[in-house]
Length: 290
Image 1 (tube, one colour):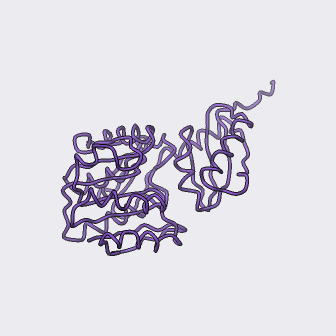
Image 2: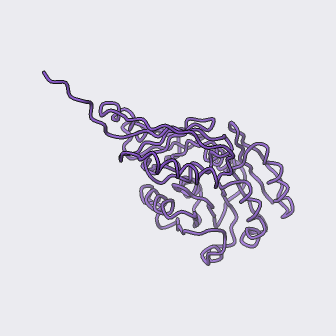
Image 3: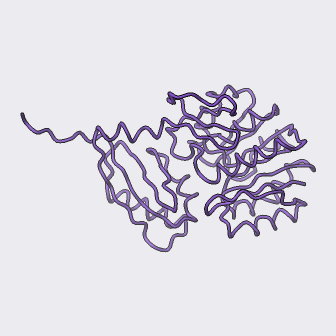
């Protein structure tokens, strides 16, 4: 019987970056399935054979954007057909975070009935709810439900796959505006919003900054989730202040532990008081109110 070479179904691009650049990495790749292994290590599954020179250039560009001094090391590894079936099980997941349970449309198990369900299509590379910044925001949202607080209008900045918008939509009944700088994120949020039956309450826009007219249309906001990078959170503070209600709760994430005090100080100038921190690994989510 002749020996047949194993069929290659996909490739893995394995690379490592400094931990503080992880947030940028999660937003950088639109192709394939990105798996965050923690501590700055990533696996990117792609179906088309990667060209080494092309990917070397992409990592050079990533290093420039993320301000990484050294070249990003990477390796390209083939995955055999029989292994690919197992690898794609990352799309068949069920993740419990606080009272939330996040699962994908392919999940075959039972979703815990006592939890708040969020269905997310995991084909998108930038957010299935497992990143520490998203986890922190979900825990913060869960904690807010124990207060006497009912937001009438909500804002999700840096929505990614729309998990936080959907979570807010499941907890409260007001309208929600979701925004992201990437069109792929907007598409993902719209699809996941539909999966969760919230298309009539969640609107999504592609926007860089807070200048899009829709921000004023939905203002003033009583609850804001902003899962972006710490420098961006500081930069948008004054603009955000023009859109939020006098009594408001904001959840800020994408913050490394050593950056937290700087972000708190920027929002203290607007009258916000730190309510609680949610540290997970190298990251921390802040819950502030005024």
